[in-house]
Image 1 (tube, helix red, strand yellow):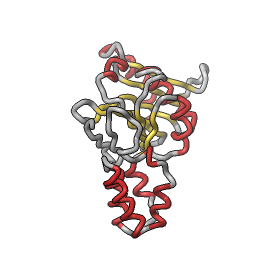
Image 2: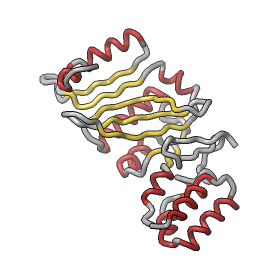
Image 3: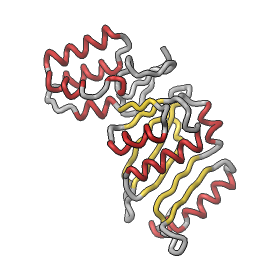
Image 4: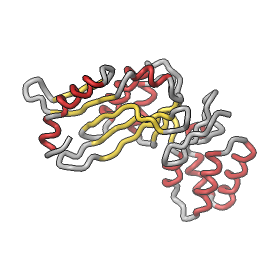
Length: 230
């Protein structure tokens, strides 16, 4: 849609109606402040058929957010998956005014209701935003919540580049021997950095210790690279 931001938001409902004419399985939810003024607050959408599509993808969902530019600003929340060919597959989107516990709850509940239900075992990858950390286990009781090792690496307060390299190698290690070797490198050169790393459960960032039976998840890379099965 083109034009001013005011005009675009006014056409949002009409646009979604047109999309549904092409894709009958298209899912949309728009929320407003009240029935009287109907001021836009947030929306959710995904292309269909969601549940059938999700069954063809790996049981791994990457969630994140980005800031919208323009007069009204706002936040775009996204959920993506990985197809069998290791390619990124967009799943669901939500526009909201700000990143809050309420907005993440709304997005994840809508996502869960349309894709797989709440009793499915799968991996969620996200950053360590406290709002996400609090919401994920409440919405998805059986999900394994993991974090971007890339994000953890950037937050290690160290001037030693070798620490981040060794951490990346530890995160991607597939054997305990390799994992311990890289951790020992950090211990010998940067004990402060190691203290920060070990303060985060290794089950949330290490390939070796993530408790997933069939898939090996590598949440290190910024492009959500996922390794093949063991």
